[in-house]
Image 1 (cartoon, rainbow, N blue to C red):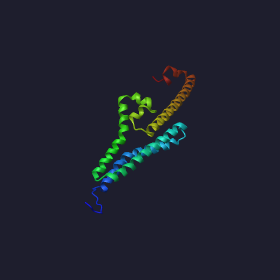
Image 2: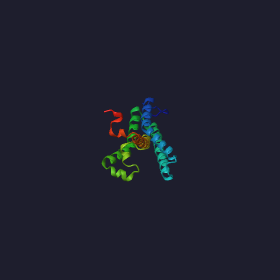
Image 3: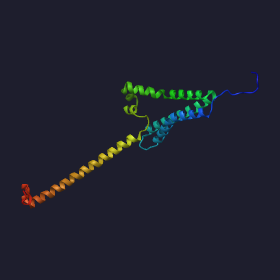
Image 4: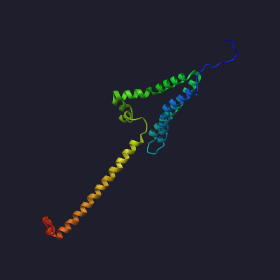
Length: 188
């Protein structure tokens, strides 16, 4: 017991750190990517200044919180974990704690959607899908709008064709009055 040398009793190996990195990366990468998307979206000209600033600061906070969580959990595990099971248990606990806000939000959506609509900008759509930018839905709306505009233009073109054909038919009927009887050219 009275020795000048230190001995390590840790069973922690590279496998434990690999599982930690995969679990934390898989969980936090979504927040980092969504934060970066918000920051990039804030620079688009279609947003007014106030909305752009909200997107920018939301993205910075989301990205920073995810990166900070990853950094601090790595430091904590390096200091306290003695085995692979310790590091895995710590990473699962951190993932659970960082997901509590999403669980509470899901509960609020399930309990009373009007509360969520009252306090959020996007309302009911957020409860159904992921929080963040959903380009597919926006692109679908734009595609549908474009398709409707094309169909309207096509219908108008068809109406003009019908009017032209009606004028031609009237001219033909004026020159050949026998066609009005429904028996053109003497056929039964």
